[in-house]
Length: 238
Image (spheres, rainbow, N blue to C red):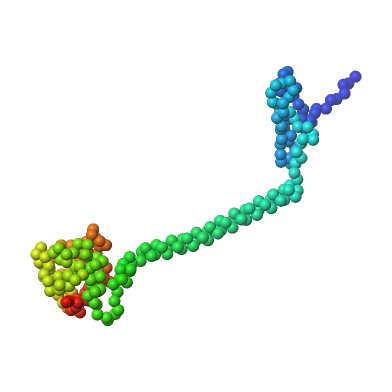
């Protein structure tokens, strides 16, 4: 008599068959994996008589059911995420626009730095076109740039009340005698004072003012004022 055919278990059935547990082994929870499940939960629970914590499978009522992707909760989460992403994008765009403004501000600051650094100095000693240059303005130039060294008791006193008489038609110091006359009224080119203010290598000494004692050589806008004063005859004497 032929034996009845016994069918092989399906692959799915074989997958879900449990292997027998070894004697004394602690039972472990079988992962709950269902197609479409977003969450897997296993709860540690003390097993009676074992004196330690082990994992046990969740009861049917403890299983967290998968959340459908089109459920209100999921839609709400996605909506919130979209809103947060939009806010972040707006913030980045705002930073970009502000960064552009900042770059423009940086360019403006750089332009100011590359502008004529002597602009303020030129404005301070500016005179009206065609107007005579008063000696009071020349004294302001001396006060702001020369009297750190050239004061009473030195070979050339450029302080207020002494500068004009020490300059006009006066010779330079003996060690700079090559300069001829400090101020020749009507002739800036022959005035050693003007030469010392405008030439990097005068016949003697150094260009004035010396940078280590003040702001360094004067810009042309200021030396032009001195030249104008000398050209007009160096007025301003007592």
